[in-house]
Image 1 (cartoon, rainbow, N blue to C red):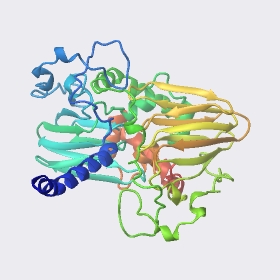
Image 2 (cartoon, helix red, strand yellow):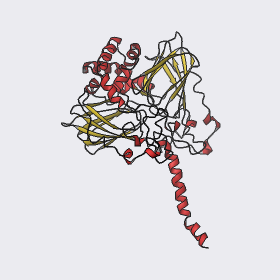
Image 3 (tube, rainbow, N blue to C red):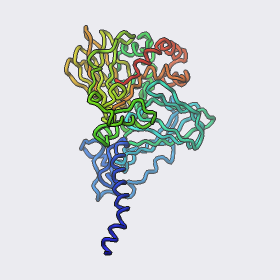
Image 4 (cartoon, one colour):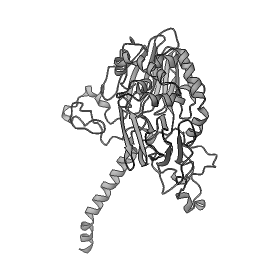
Length: 455
């Protein structure tokens, strides 16, 4: 009887234990890095073995000091064109972070200094203002600018992969504590990505993206290059290795199907499921890619989206498949997908495809039919039809809603606008040039709206 009694009294504990285990497994893909498979894996930074992250130091060599880091006690120098100093508590400086999925950095900003326009392709970011007064803002994939002047002890969140920036608007130095959910969040600065990559993005492609003459592109490139050495030092302080979190950008499904109920008023991460009694075979088939979208726009490209908004059966499946058509001379504008990596299969035509790493290296190639290329999640990329005829591309992304941040529109056509003086400081040009570029986007609002869908 005693044994039976003990079993019954512990049943609630076992139930709680099982539910806890299920919860942790279902939350595992909300981390930007793969989950650890052991208590710790202190990075062996000297190892010649190349893996996603770092190999583990032998357990016999691990010490208590591997789990403590004093590098954030003092700020980095702000004696540079941006008035910015960064002390990074990432795996390069703090090897105990390896496999733990977190980085903590200290940012010092001199009065009037800025944190330049940038993204973190592999992580969301929480910013805690330790001292000072900071104007912080980020821009959504629909070109909406969210901003606020923050004071000490306030906290700010930047969703993963979105363009953001800051400026010290106080009288004294500002100190910010930045927390990332990745040991390698990445730190590509957009001015350098655009105008100082190696090799450089062709001037004609940039001029078509920014709607200005190539002569102005040359001027901006010459100004950005003068600060390239500072950007290089800044970028190298944050690690730049490509990481696919859990091999999918979306949480794993917890049932066979969950057809999106697009009309539901319930707000969740994704969409609620349509009642199974209303699910039909048609929900799992989509004919929307059979014909191309119109290319009658300044950029001469059209997108037919096969995402959860047009194909509700994709809900919880972590995939989008879209069709891209480009007329001769057309371009796919500079953009990022904050929530998905992208594989592109060229079906027809001749296409130059390129993406820029967080260290400002441009990887590009002229593709021929049935060649495939991969764009790591969150990196800036673009394409140009370099053949005499039309181009057809099938793009597959590992998210049901990967997002489409059209970078020129993000920077020069956001609502509300990014102040001219902040853009001028970023691009090292006069505010008059910024105003001129912005004026080119005034008539382009309708185009920006139509291309905000997910490629």
